Length: 173
Image 1 (cartoon, rainbow, N blue to C red):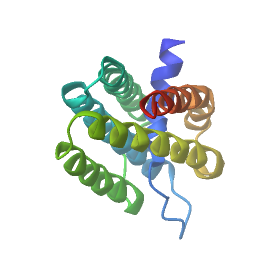
Image 2 (cartoon, rainbow, N blue to C red):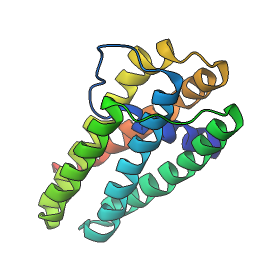
Image 3 (tube, rainbow, N blue to C red):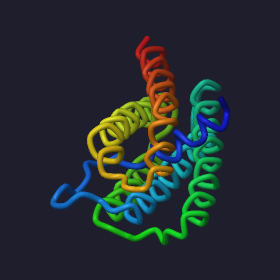
Image 4 (cartoon, rainbow, N blue to C red):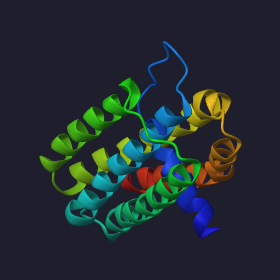
């Protein structure tokens, strides 16, 4: 289960922002999207560990950073095995830019304001990832192993989204 969660997280970050849909992403582009998206959530999770005002938010940030780092390791192993060189693309560039902007915004916040902004972003982020997995990544992945990995880890995205929604509800009380 842990490996499935980690793999899911690698893909979860796959598309936190809308994919640039002018043309379908190639496998090397999908690989770059996955790595970039995971790094975005690793960075946000690490910040939440430091700035979260509740144990629940700090723990969730730690889980996101740990899980996404593990997934990036697995994603790197898969692309090495497949001899695929991740290729930068407009979607991965947007993910990086959006992640940097989110971190800049979050760094200015403290206490409950930070917690709410972080968790709200995680809900949106993971819902976007699920949408991207279902509508873009799975349908466009050509390599059977890459496609199988994406499909296998989808339940972990759902679990992260559910956890983030639960935290969101707790913070609203």
